[in-house]
Length: 149
Image 1 (tube, rainbow, N blue to C red):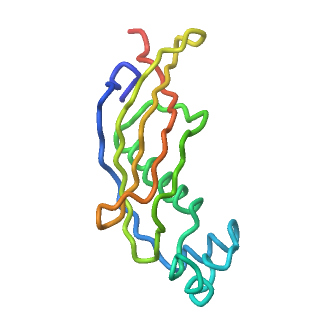
Image 2 (cartoon, rainbow, N blue to C red):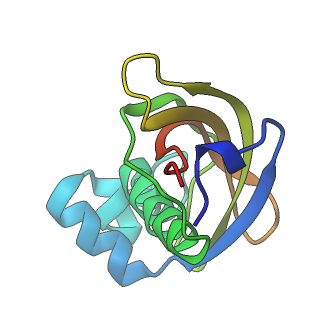
Image 3 (cartoon, rainbow, N blue to C red):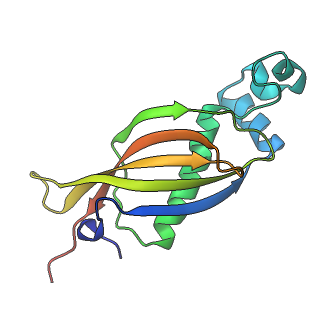
């Protein structure tokens, strides 16, 4: 199990592989972000996107899926997150793209009021199959401290 004490500032990770499908882009958009350029090839062609593109919020959801799989694989003693900062959608995400993540730990801090936990901030970069960054954000993670023996 990976605990707060195991997190190192400067530590990097590469993980995930998410194939973006047209069906999922349209399904997400219908339910959560029904703008024409997320729903219709014809309408998207009239915009700067040029073709159907995924909602930025859908991109966030795809990243969350990869992140949870990574946390499970690494058996992190995670306790959720109070939020993210500096979310930026840099490039459109299109059906047919394959996304992956890179992260770097920026800082960590033990909780003064809750000795059983700490937090860390990490910079997340989401890249497509061409290694082009499509989204960045800074995440704040909560994590358990190592239990006393």
